[in-house]
Amino acid sequence: MKLSTRIALWAAAVVPVLVVLAGLLLLPLVGRDLRHQQDARLRDRAAAVLPSVRALVAADTRGRPKVEQNQQRKVVDAALDSGVRVTAEDGTVLLSVGPQPADDRAFPTAPGGPATVRDRGAAWRVLTARVSGTGANGGSGTLWVSEPGGLAGDQTAAVRRRVLLVAAVSAPVSALIGFALAERATAPLRRLSRRAAELDPAAPPTPGTGDGPGGGTNGGTEGGTDVGPGGAPFAAVRSGTAEVDELAAALALLLSRYDEQALRTAQALETARSFSSAASHELRTPLMSLRTNLDVLAAHQDLPPAERAEIVAELRDDHTRLLELLTALGTLARGDLVEVDSFGPVDLAELADAAAADARRRHPGAEITVELPPELRVFGWEPGLRIMLVNLLVNAAVHGRGGPLRADPARVTLRLAPAGPVALLTVDDAGPGVPPGERETVFHRFHRRRDSPGSGLGLTLVAQQAALHRGTVRITEPPTGTGCRVEVHLPLPDAGAPTLRLPARRDWITGGQRGDRRP
Image (cartoon, rainbow, N blue to C red; front, side, top):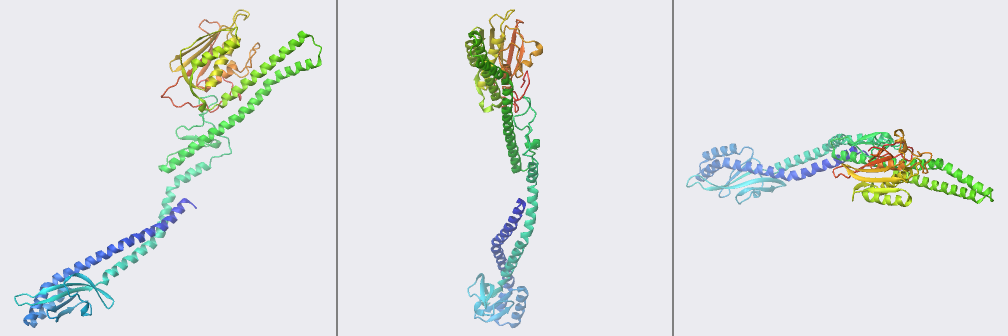
């Protein structure tokens, strides 16, 4: 049943009940007011006839018939439509005109205000007054002024019938008015329902445009607008009705969260597929080499020790390359799927010092120096920042050898310092450097020099983490002009800045080929 129909039925049921209840409260008040009006009218009639009644009693006492008749006419004229009864002191009826009880015993004997008496099933309202004749020998008598008491009851009954009539008429009228008002009031809900029905949950969510890798706004809303499933825009337009606006805002927030989760699910699936595809493609060569060397060892059991040692060394190198490649791909996929709740305050100086110590252990021949502040905190993902620092130092240690034949030990300098609103991290080496035309392509997946022993993903991981932290990375030359410098800018925490939002699309594992990532 429609909401407007429900409201119409409730109005048709409730309004007549309210009318009847109001009538029940009103009828006693109406009856009381009518009695007060009747009593006031009786008092007015008594005051009007009282002078003539006094003269009538005095004329009767003194035995003046003509004067008595004259006063009787005056009393009748002043009584109008009320009943008047006048008796002498001995009970003789001097005058009895107008509507009044037929039984003399029905009249009150004691003087007083209007009272209700009954005579043969009929009610009368009677006012009783003692009257003294004019003059010293005027005598005395009793005056009764009466009206039918059923007049107030008849009028009350008429009011009761009108209340019931209004209650009967109010049922359909209130239903129609309630339905019309409900239709108008629920119009924003119907519009909201139509807009929600136009969304296609079967279609993939369409991300918005952003400035992170691959665009996107992390599934959030800007200005009350959200992109619903299937790419249909859902705008939380104000309707002027607080409940409808709250529902629209809740629906927009729900769609925002749905889009975000659907997008993250789609990204996770695409990341898994890309991981499998990249792993199968990149592992084919080392696996074939492993198979070939194993076949040689199996087919030639009597190989000379020198040749066997050479083949075993190649097997170890291929095994190491396989492990590095799988580890790098897994780390790249992990960075693509990290959530914002994994971020927190991190001391970048402490991480850099630990990464330098680890690089010295892994590359004892390299000269690694660090210039670090006592503390420099950023808001970031600690494992990701550690990955970035380790890969920067490993890349410099591997490719930073100097001399004509690159026989000199690698000399690497790691510096970290605040530079305004960002933390500036530089890694310098004394190697051959990177030509300007290749300074962006080195961040591409699987980009390797011919003599590089790595997997081609080290600098890709650096670029990924810089973009993930809303920073930038670029390759330049050191101040000496010889070698290579990698600069990373990471924003420092700002209390007035909005909460960190990650890029909605992160496609480093799924095929993103970007060098300098800017927030």
